[in-house]
Length: 252
Image 1 (tube, rainbow, N blue to C red):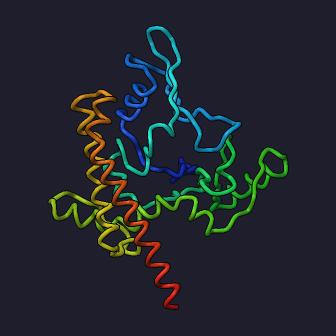
Image 2 (image 1 turned 180 degrees about the vertical axis):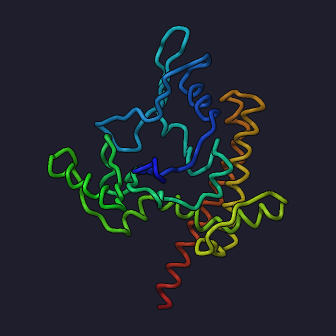
Image 3 (image 1 turned 45 degrees about the vertical axis):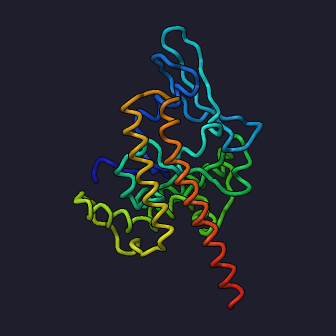
């Protein structure tokens, strides 16, 4: 408390294992030792999600790159993610003086350079931002709380709505689960829980399978059934949610 005067929080989608980087390097065509991994090589002429992973082969210094969008959803599926992340309910780094994260909302996601959401919680942080605007070092729009929540909608669904199911499942398996805030522990529908269960399996299998073979081709082949099942259940759940909204609207 005496030494740390200011905390900057990075809005996190989940902590990946080193295996994630090894997998991306192989997908980029680098089968040997590498360095200088870059996870978001941007295309300023395109849109925010159109970015690449790159690394440098140690032996010949050749740069290898792969388009991330060609690899599917690496974040929503939980591939190579730490188990601890499934028991984190802090989406927006709530205790930080200032929080920074991707603005995955229209129109900000249309920029290849990317845009960040900024949340200030202290006078010092607010002053820093205001000074940046006055000196024209920053260009900012004021957005609503609703849009901020929407920008991290997937994370809120996973970390809050799915938390109770994961805790119950951990307890049944005699695994240790941390105590979480009651306000985030809400019962969900059976199909939503099916998605959570599938995501848990997919996350764990991604680590187990990579440790077993460490080869990107074999990994994709073995992971396909789990990813297909997760995709099917997620789509089914989304369609049921839409159907419920339509029925509720007609009844009201």
